[in-house]
Every structure is written in C-alpha cells, then in structure tokens.
Length: 420
Image 1 (cartoon, rainbow, N blue to C red):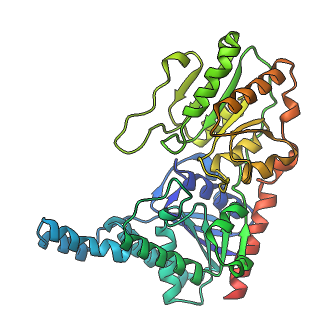
Image 2 (cartoon, rainbow, N blue to C red):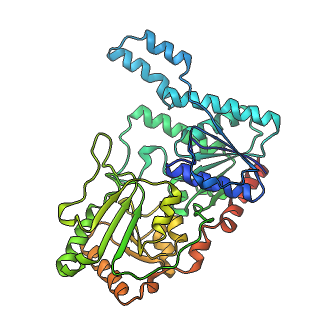
Image 3 (tube, rainbow, N blue to C red):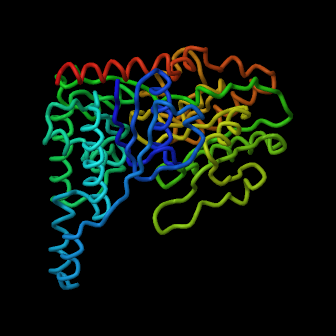
C-alpha cells in the first residue's frame, strides 16, 4: 500500500513522535510505501539505515496573512482580545498550527496527484494531524482515512480529576471537531480496548475500530539479567503533577523504616523530562532519599533503551485514574526488555490485563502502605535470586513486535479502503 502518515511529531523526543517513527519503519520494512508529513521532525536513529520505502517531509508552520492582518488592526484591549479569540475558536488552533494544517493539506494533495495514496493515516497527539485529514476528506471524500487515537480527546474528556478547564465555547467547538473525526474517518485504531471504549460512546462505531499496541524497539536485542549487589528500579518518561513519584517516595520511606539496611542496596532512577507543570521548577530529590533516588536528563531512544535494558526492575507510574485506559509508549519497550515491571496502576485496566499471567507486580497507586509491602515482596525475591517468578512470558514481548502489530494496521487500512 502507498500510505500517507500525518503526524505533527515525528522521530523526535515526544512520545507520539517516537511511536509513529517505529510504525513508519515497520510499515516500510513490511513492503509498504510510506510518506510522513510532520512538523517537529527529529533525527533519532529509530528509522534505521534502509529508508527505501520511507519518505519524511517536514512541513513548516506559516502564520496566515489574514490572521496577522487582524492582529495588526484590532486594538489591544478587552474587546479586541475577545474578537481575536474568534479565529482560534473557529479553527481550534493557534495561528502557526493552523498555518501548518493548510500547508500539510497542500503537500499531501500535491503528492497524491503525482501518485495516489491508498490510505491517509493521521495520528493524535496533537489534534492538528486529524484536522488535516478531516479537511482533505471533506473535499475529497473518496480518499480513505484511518484515524489513530492515543489519548482521550478533547482535553475536557480526560478522566477525573484531570479534565481540562476549557470554557463552554471551547468545549462545544472541540466536541464538534471530535464528532467530525469519528464521523468522517473510515476506520480507527486505538492502543487499547479501554481507550476505545472510553472514547467511543456508540457501540456501533466499534465495528470499524482496531486495537494495536505500540511497537517496541524491536530491532534491539534484550539483555540477559545479571545479579549485582544493588537492586535498581528504573523509570523512563516524563514526570509532572499528574504523574508524580510522591506516593512512591512515601512507600519507600515506610519500607526503609522497617528495613533500614536497604539503604545500602536500594536504588530508584528516573530518566526523562522532569517538571511539575508550566511555570514550575523541576522536581528535586527528597533530602532523606538523596542516596536512593536520582533524576537523569532525557536521552534519545537508543540510549534510553540501553539504560532500561540493564535495569533490575522497570517502574511504571500511571496517572491516578480509577481505570487504566492507557497503553503507555514506554510500555512496549518495557515488555521487550524482558524485565519484571513494578507498576503503580489501577486494579482494572491495561496493565492488570497484561499481568494476568505474570509480568510484574501491580500495587495501589494511592496507598503508600501497599507500595511498601509490594517493595518488600520484590526485594525478597531479588535477595533469593528469584525475580524470574514475577517476570513475564515471551508472549508479552511478542505482542509488541511488527509480526503482531503491523497486520492489525494493514487490516484497519484495508477496512477503510473497502468502506470508502
């Protein structure tokens, strides 16, 4: 198939940029012709050296002239601000993002005229990629479109207590857009059935939905675990006010109070962007845990893989939701690394389903006492050299390999083409 992928982020350090780059590589290796239209395009080594069937086009964001004109003539007062908010509400974009949407639409159609695409595949996040595909679909309804949803959207649809505090008009406009994405796309792909069920409130729409987990760094080889005199828990990925290790630190403190000698061998390492939120400073290591906890600056995927593949235990901090709806980007590489996972996760959801037959330990993300008890269990197994008891079987690692994931995408694309 000749596939156009529209992804705002591609091959950069954003989670969506990473998972989309893995997908583009795997699709090209499966023999498909892939053209990627992006904005923030990085230079990570994810794509490999053989790019015969893979073309990446970086499309610039241009501030629309009419929008500039409005900003130049409208007075900078209360009423002027309200007036200038109208274009943002209508387009549901910033000026630069709207300029990118227009430019990508032109670029995709230009390439389509040279040699037609069999399918357009747009990726969330952000929603700008879907807006491009929607604009194309409305004008050229015969072009098949498959939409991908990695997160709940719009932002005000996030599960409690993390909903965005958008205004009434903004919620109305974003809901209209989302309804259009669902209506006009010929098929959808979600990383988990929980995400699908959360987003699609109409059971009939599930007939054209497909579940495909994120691909792992499948070209990398897992390393055999080695025993050492310290047990190292490692977490890769962003930390912020919604994904904070605070409750974990409380659990560690309770464990240390009962096992003071553990200070000699217990280590927790966090790699990635580390900040509490806009306008705030990065989180700091608690003074009482300074010899146990460390924060490490973000690395590219290649170095991150090397780092997680030598951990004793991989650490997963879920958002504090009542149900685990997310299949996190890092999770595919966690599974590929063949290491036990220590997950602060809800009892129901993606992680709970994955670990039914082993894979790690799930502990209550809201209860420091449960965390302390789970730590005690893991460390007891480590001391007796029995971590393999909680290690997952090979099927979990295989589930995030191209031979399992790419056929799902191919089926979703063929479904969209057939329905169109």
